[in-house]
Image (cartoon, rainbow, N blue to C red; front, side, top):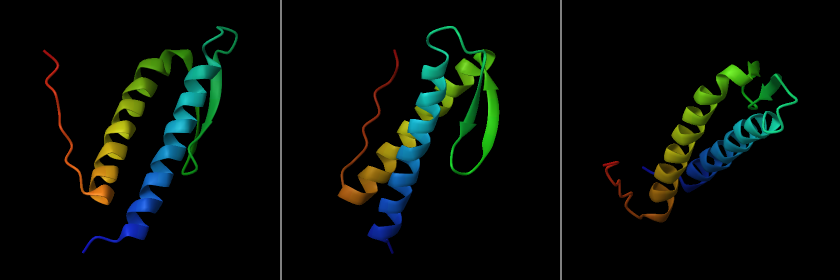
Length: 84
């Protein structure tokens, strides 16, 4: 049984995580910062410029999760296009 309230809460939590990870990436954009305190609401970690690749992968995964949750909530299908 699908709980609309639960899915809406997961969507809000996922959006908050996306914003936290995007803030970390933006902190490195000007080149002045070498480290950033990333607080996702679930954990707090120190990340560095060397972590940018992993941060981007995490954001991609979070957007995928968000799309899936929104598809469940709104009843639409998720279409995946191959990368080639």
